Length: 140
Length: 159
Figure 1 (cartoon, one colour):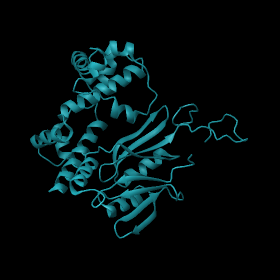
Figure 2 (cartoon, chains in turn orange, green; figure 1 turned 30 degrees about the horizontal axis):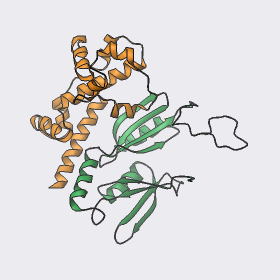
Figure 3 (cartoon, helix red, strand yellow; figure 1 turned 180 degrees about the vertical axis):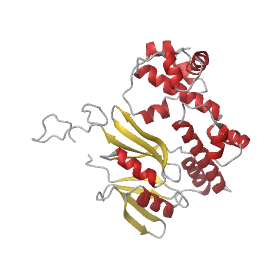
């Protein structure tokens, strides 16, 4: 019984890794379900029970995290960054960013401080929370 | 107080599979594989670096109860054990190609950062391992060990 849970966890992790590798690409649930060897409906449900959020939300937060990184690290335009991380419209990007981070991309950039830490840690720890902590921290 | 690190530990879910992966796939070498009766003492190291060993530990009773064991196993399998192991190489591209040919699962293909070029991989159980070819960037605080204080040291990066 528990070995089955481990096997399912491992498959969900494999699908999540696939999202992290291809976060600029559109969310491809059929492909991810295939990576995880489960049906599409089962995939979304199981991913959520494993990691606490839907695949869609996971990907949004990954993209927002990468955009936060680029806003700090580069001088590229916000439109460029929006497209680079996989959003297709500036409106959706700005709205999603503000909703998750609590400030707009340009406000975030103005306050940003470059953190000289390895990217694997920024990817793990800077991915903004869905649960409001980032908003609280940013005073919004 | 201290003069080195001799041992660190990774929880694995099957020691035969772990030995096969860490040795035959990843390219480490077995430094100990002993049946202590109450546990299998399985350690690996970078080839030639015995004394800096990684214990591939199987979680289970009596060290922990059944329920805790299941929790640990679940955390490993969902990749929640954090940054488990970091290795260095002097040829990241070749290492990447070798591991890829051996069917390793990557969390990140070679990517260049200010501190070097690295890759991320998973062991068969879900642990997160990273391999880096470090850039020669003196002054990166936690990546450049301080130069040993010897008469030969003259402010170089110490590597």
